[in-house]
Image 1: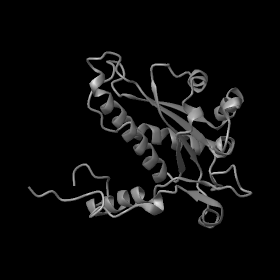
Image 2 (image 1 turned 135 degrees about the vertical axis):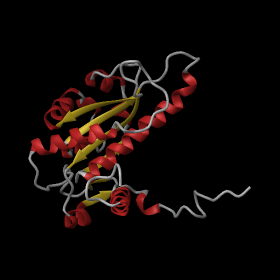
Image 3 (image 1 turned 45 degrees about the horizontal axis):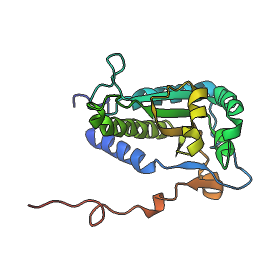
Image 4 (image 1 turned 180 degrees about the vertical axis):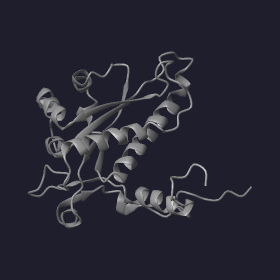
Length: 219
C-alpha cells in the first residue's frame, strides 16, 4: 500500500499506533526513597539525546491552520535542554525550585519548554485559539513520539516554569505564551514502576466515549 512503511500492513500500523496512544501516560518516580529518577534502562547519553532530537522533529508534523510568520509558519516554539544544560538551568533558577520541581529536574534526561506565539494585532487575534490548539497538538505528538522511542514523559505546568525569570533564563521572548514543560527520561522497569512509580491521577478516571463524552448525532 502506498505510503506505508515497507513490510507493514495497514492493520499492523493501526495496532502499533493505538498501542502507543494507550500506553502513553505521565510516568515518573513517586515520593519514596527513589525520588529523583525517571528510570534506569540502559542507554548512553548520546543515544538518549538522539532519541529526543528525532522525537522533537516528528512532533513538528502537528496540524496548524494559519502561518505565524513568513520565516517560521508554525505557531509553536520548542526550547530543548539536554541533561548538562538542565543542570545549568537549575543553577540559574534556584529560587524557583519549589515543591517537587527539584525532584522532577533531577530525574529528567531532557526537558522541552514549549510556548506559542500569539498574534499582536486585534484583527488577527481571533486566530490565537487556533495557534494554541496547534501547539498543544505538537506537544501531544512529542509525548507519543517519545513513548514510541521508549522514553518516559511528564507534561508539567508548574507556575514557576511560566515565570518571567524562567523566560529570561531560557532566552524566550516575552511576547511568547507558555504552554508546557515536557520532561523526558528513561522509563522504569515494570517492577520499579509498580513499586515506586507515579502515574497521572486522571488515567484511572478515564471513561468510555459512548454515553460519556462522545455521541453519534442524529438529526
